[in-house]
Every structure is written in C-alpha cells, then in structure tokens.
Image (cartoon, rainbow, N blue to C red):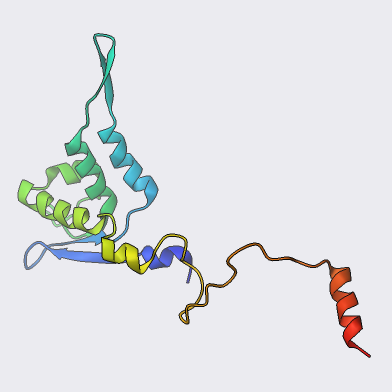
Length: 153
C-alpha cells in the first residue's frame, strides 16, 4: 500500500433513486492548481494590472477534477463523458450540490485536526517515541569493525 492510497477514497452523492456521482475525497495539488489559475487571471487596464478572478471557472474546474465516476446518461442511455462540457450541462441545483460536497471535502484542516497532527511531528510511533529527532552520527565501516573487535576477547 503506497502513500497515495491513503488519499484515494471517493464519496458517492446520490442525486435521486437512479443517478449518482462519485467524488474524490482528496484532490491532487495539480488538480487544485488548475482551479486556482482561474482565480489569478489578470488584465491590464490603462497600463495597470487588475486581477479578475473567475470564481465560476474555479468551481467548475474543482468539480470536474473531483469526479471519479458517474452514471449520468442521455436519452439513449449513453453515459456522459466526464468532461468540462458535461459539467457545464448539469442543472444548477445538481452542480451546486456537487460543489457543496467538493468544497466541504477540500477545506483546510480544522484547529482540532491540526492539533492532532501538529507540523513537524509526523513521525515516531503510536507509543509516542519521536524516532530520530536530529542528526545522528554514522560511523565508518572501519570504526564499526574496530569496535566489534574490541568486544571480542
């Protein structure tokens, strides 16, 4: 089990008795960055830079990046591709519901969560042994062999 497997869960959102959307519980930094770019758009007006954040695109990018799977289909039973075009076709109420889950899932950690895993202390074991906390002197192989030879005797 690798590092990223801890971040691979999905949350199923039931839209009605038949339709559902699986949303990733964790976004990658790269996926979030695409959304963040929408908030950092800049235009030059009268020679001065003006930031013009596109909140709609930000939300659409994050919802799209969060969709792991869905069963939304057309009138012929063809499942929609997971694409920006499909996200833009969603009814406003459905989009807003999915956005609410995405936004809640990707909020910064609460004070209690940060206290549980304070920065700089993600190491050690359940018995609270901090493990190596600083530089450790590593002996050369010759010194190790010489020390072992001292014990024989």
